[in-house]
Image 1 (cartoon, rainbow, N blue to C red):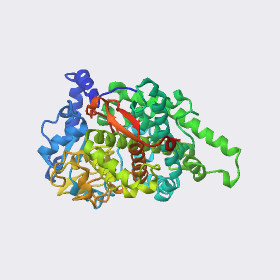
Image 2: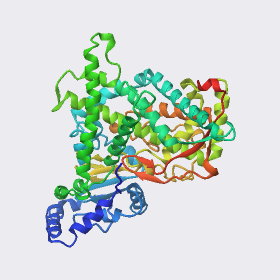
Image 3: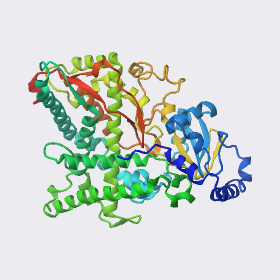
Image 4: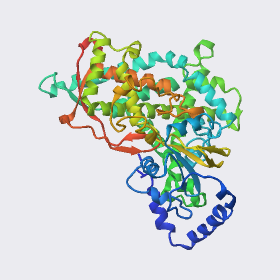
Length: 536
């Protein structure tokens, strides 16, 4: 995986153009085009803007430093309020970090802020904006989004895939038990635990579930080439990481030709490598269908459903194969990244708050017991487990800034004029830490969701907690992610006693991309606590 700091390209900007005649020309053009003709705009009540913006670069230099982008914007919100304006190069943006304003944007102005900006990642990795999650608002986005919501992510379809979640979770639990049994000889006795890297285990499990739903095959396991599986995973991680970068060519289009930092080159290379995998999967499906023409033998998985649906060879200029590949790939990457990230941070928080872990274990003992395995029908009774997930999503929303939006028509937000073409960032990280809503907002307290905040959900209707977004662009996979997360965590904690190595706290260092990920491995000690026949 490539290693690129979020704003490392800014150092290259400074060193390559500062003080040169070229930058003076750009500054002159900037003032002429963006400031000289904006006299009429000065009469409008615009959101507050931090001082110190540079010509051409805007506030980019102010956002450099040790803090991640969303943390830097959170610090600015402390000074400038819940809505303020920044300039990212030549792109204007507003940053909102208040639940009332998030509600206003997701209801009153939902249509006005329903689009996505044009970015290099969406062009190269998103099949030239065919990837619906990053498509501009319009008929194409509506058609594909509606189809995905009905055919893959509706509650009916999520429930129909229940056997996949259950079988893959059971298989992953068996894998852990086998690992413990095989390594037991190295310990003094089998009562000792074994050390497992849980990030990889969680990633493999969630990827297998999503792969089977979308492509009808497993990503990893005894019947899959391990090198091939890891290749998929490396490409998917790079794909996700590149979508989270702020690229100079996006913010200052005049400099795109320089490809400062080499990001566009990496995007093009990753796109070719990724498309090769998608072509292979699509060919497998088309070849299989040629030999199984009966109506009862098709539509095994979502890619098959897409093949059946795309009877027209062209939708908004995209051919059927491009739509299929782009739609399946974004569902795959987003589904795995979001669910894995959510599970990893939740497990980390429990390991660092043993009292909460003990409560989850006690709840499992009461409602499941030690004589059988966890079933999905048990989840509604596991109230504290559900509260743990909500609190984890409050503190660690998978995408702390969501995905950037673009305003497509002028609107007035909280009394401030916001012009069409402005980008919008919803700072969920800051919004979820509002002390007026959450007492002791920096503390991990799941109990709040069974007492003071018991009626707050995460599905985009309670704007105090919107880890998956809200409005038209809300994540369509919420139901799948939550069902998967609940089942996996409940099964893991019911099947094994889990402890930290040397009783040390888990390292909570983050890394940044399109999702907020744990920077270091998650090595924990597991010990089975059920009878051996329940792992068979």
